Image 1 (cartoon, rainbow, N blue to C red):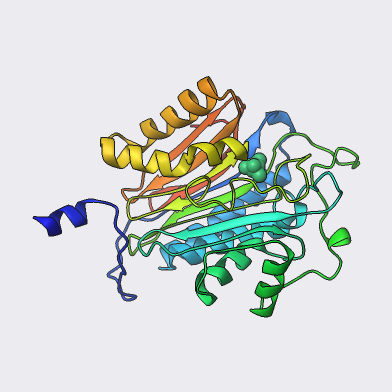
Image 2: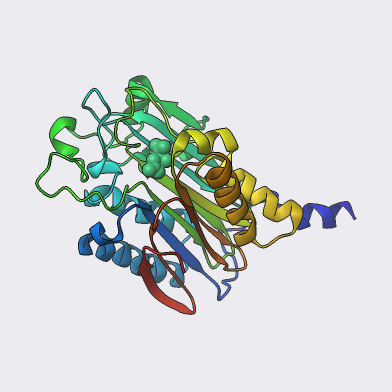
Length: 315
Ligand code: ASP
């Protein structure tokens, strides 16, 4: 009886490495909230498409969801086309501070970094925290120095490496997509993972940390669901948005989409009056997007039965 209860809820269990491969797999990626669909560039759409298509191939070949999520986010960070990694916005003091987090659903392992100034790939910093340290969260220059000591790659000249894609002063300014990035995946072992990475929003104060590195505010995964969020981070932290969505779906027994729409539309939208969006998947392969007070969320998804689909407006 007790055993049945444990298996029916979202525990963290260790799957054997040599799982028997199920047919079902899913990947869903986001590139932030969108305020003006016309200003989302072809390059951004092509980037999301190629990331999703590669992730689909990796999952089909049996890759672990954690690896797929990290690979997807590295490519998004390196692209310089979104507000994460190379393309990160600067704070009001004129330098970049990045945030990222990662969670593996079936083990409950987490890793996060915040206010990083030199890491080339914040999501890899989060992975080092998860896999190589006994801790879960590193912050600021001292945390960064520790992670560099563990092998995290740093950029030599942050002021020339980080070029904010949506810099209003730049010739190519396109205020279309805000561009925090995230990815969630279900692999053929039935395991879920989620990750999020950002430069934070434009005009943030130095030292400010948003929701993207906070487990349960932006990134969350367990045995049942994997989620990643984008939007006004302060409100996502106050409401533990992705944890709340996952637990409402689980405890109330409602579909994941219904739980997500309640938290995003009714709480963040109607009560808080802020804009934001989430992506989420379930172990059954449900693909869930929910957004409020924006025209949409730059996203792409694919599964064992669904070729890569990329868009802004939610399906
Ligand atoms: N959530 C991010 C933050 O508050 C920004 C965003 O997703 O646009 O830092």
